[in-house]
Image (cartoon, rainbow, N blue to C red):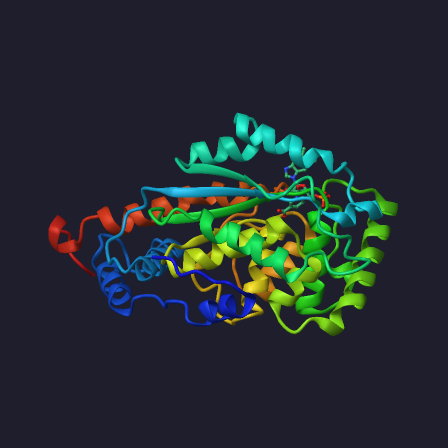
Length: 338
Ligand SMILES: Cc1cc2ncn([C@H]3O[C@H](COP(=O)(O)O)[C@@H](O)[C@H]3O)c2cc1C
Ligand SMILES: O=C(O)c1cccnc1
C-alpha cells in the first residue's frame, strides 16, 4: 500500500524512509549470474542491470511483464519571456495527439509492449512566470506531486515518466543551475529549436530567474516549487511513488532528469531505483547525468522528451532479465566451467 502525504514535510519524510533493495535477492541474483552459460562478465552491463533489478523487486529471478509509461503535461508562465520556438498551445494539442495515439512516444511505448497513460495537469492554468516570482505555491506543488504519486500502477514492474510542456527546457535549465551550480550557459540549450538570439535570451532568463530565487532555495523541493512546473513535479512524485512500491524506473531526457534531481537534492540516494534510459542531445542533459552519476543506456541524438528515450530502453531491461532468468546454468546445460 502506498502511504499518503498531506504536506511537503511528510513527503520529505517518506523520501527519507524509502525502501532499500532486498539484499538477499540481490546476492541470490549475483550467485545465479555467476552460474549462467557464458564467460564471467560477458553480458557486460546487462548483468549489473539484472542484479540491480532483482534487488529492487526482491526477486532473484525476475521477469518484466508490465511496464508503464506515463506522460505528464503542464504549461509554463515563463513562455511569456519568448524562450521556446513553439507556442504554448502546442502542449494541449500534443496531449490530444498522445490520446489519439499519434505521437512518437505512443509508437515507442507500443513497440516496447508498455501500457501508456497521459495525464494533463491544469493546462489552462499555467504556472506563474518564474522570472517574476515562484512558479508554484506550496499547495500547487503538493497537488502536482500527488498527481504523479497516484498515477503509478502498483502492479507495474518498470516505470517510465515523460513530459510535454512548451517552455519546460527553460525550467529544467533553471532547476539544474539552482541545484548544481555553474553558469546559465552550461545548462541552457535550444530546446525545440531556438536560433542564436533566442538561445541568448533564454540563457539570460535562466540566469536572472536563478539569481532571483537562489537565496530562498534550501533543498530540491524548494527549487521544484520556484523553478519547476506541474508536469515536472508530477514526474518527481511518480518516481518517488515507484520507490515506495519497489518499482525500478528508467529516466528519460533533460526535463525528466531535472525533476528527478529535485528528489536527489532533497534526500541523497532517492534515485537509487533509477537508471538513465538515454542521453539527450540537449547539452544540459549529459552534464546533469554526470552530476547525478548516471550512465545512460542509449545515446541516439534524440531531443524530444515525452518519455521517448526511456521507452526505447525498456527492451534492454527486458533482454537483461530474459538472459538472467531464463538462460541455462552450466550444471543444467552440461557445459564445462572454465
Ligand atoms: C510538436 C512538439 C512535440 C513535442 N514533444 C515533446 N516536446 C518537447 O519540447 C518541449 C520543450 O521544448 P521548449 O522548452 O523549447 O519548449 C516539451 O514539450 C518537450 O516535451 C515537443 C515539442 C513540440 C513542438
Ligand atoms: O531532453 C529532452 O527530454 C528534451 C530536449 C529538448 C526538447 N524537449 C525535450
